[in-house]
Amino acid sequence: MITSKQRFYTPGSCLGRDTFTPSLTLLLLVTSAAIIFGNGCWRPSPEESTATPDTAVSQPEPRPRPDIVFIIVDTLRADRVGMKRDDVPLMPFMESFSKESWNFTRASSQASWTRPSMASAFTSLYAGVHNQQFGIRMEVVEGQDHTVDALSENLETMAEYFKAAGYATLGVQANWNMRPLFGVSQGFDRYEMIVDGQNAVDITNLCLDMIKDDASAPFFLYVHYVEPHAPYTPPEQYKKLFSTIPEITDTDRNLLATYATGYYPDKVRWDLQFRETPPEPAFSDAAKAYVEVMYDAEVRFADDEVGRLIRGVRASHPGAIIVFSADHGEELWEHGSVGHGKTVYNEVLHVPLIFSFPGELPRTVDTRVELIDILPTLAAKIGLPSRDWWQGHSLLAHTADFLSPVYAETRTSIREANVYLLSVMHENMKLILDMPGNKHWLYQLESDPGELNPITDTAQSETLMLLLKQYRADNEAHPLHASPTVTNVVDQETRDILRSQGYF
Image (cartoon, rainbow, N blue to C red; front, side, top):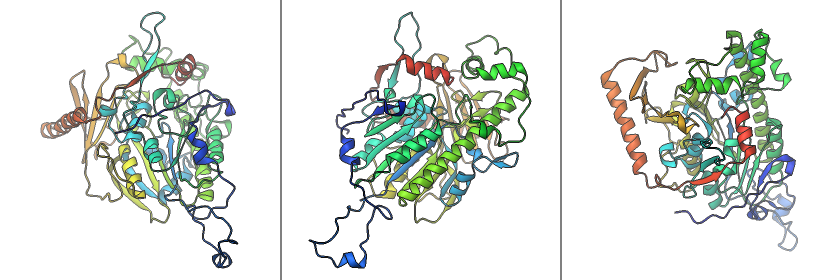
């Protein structure tokens, strides 16, 4: 199915980032300076159209296909697009952008944390097929290597798919669960990692610089902002946007100072039953409210930088297709906790999904769709063949009466946690199944959108249980289900950074 792939990864010093740069990059990216109009298509002036071959000015070949920019804002809840705090819009740019694009208002991630979610988006496969379920294996005996199962080389990623179609493939991202170490950089000609101490501004700057020098080949650019991921530390000017910031105690202030390495991982351990007691001291209600304000300040920061990126792309490549989404959302105390990866409630699954197709009229689609639909949709839009093994489908002809079930799952980043939650949404019902505990919860989403009051309806439960049974059977029968993963040793720097983000 996929030919052998030789990749080269060496630490680089460019702006303090890791650099992933196969030699093919030069063939695809190095060009002479040129002025490109439209979607890379040059149209001769009347004078030039009458010139002879000997006197005509040499012009670049038009692009065979449109450029593609795929933007992920990490940990972004769908409800933040269009939301205000203290009458201040949290995402004014994306709210405006959504109204002129194809806005899928009920999109769902396939997992509630980054690695499995992005593996699904990149491959159009459910987690039960690509098997990116866990994070780093912790040390059990002294001296044991910390390892991780990377994405199988048998699986074709989004970058590999577009590369095979003649695209220059570029990646810029800041989530350390998306390092080349985890196998997700397969197919990228250039893959940049924004390091600690840099932020969304650096990502935008680098992206705009990377696409500045045009080339005859179209580009596929994957961009992954880490804001508003914990520990929620927005620049000062964004904190000052809101007039109502909760007054917190010195105890709360000390807890917040070590949020990602103290309170948050202790709360995760308590939620996952690794601790016999909850974290002490506990957050006050004011501190919980403060966390939400800081989250929203980072959301606004991300919106400003995404807006700057999209405006820059539109200026230099007006024909580019732009996709905007998130890998997952974030719990903000709705079910008693904070963070992600531990549950499959909609606050961690519901994400924005917006496609901008230049020249197309805007539309709003309110039926449920999935992140695995992104790759098939892009392929159909630019006229590339689909893959038989994709589990998503194109959204180009998506209509209001399309009522396909939507699936998600989590096993958390910690394999020792014995967590295995599956969920299915169909029509107005949602079932969550706890596999180890052999328990389930049924919700009527129209009357209980917050999933706070499980109901008893035997017929509905049996119907959705059969859907989950079929989902698991289809995943296990998928020809790529048994694809071997690659076990990589995780370096100390990666462990330290992930620990600072609350993953250990």
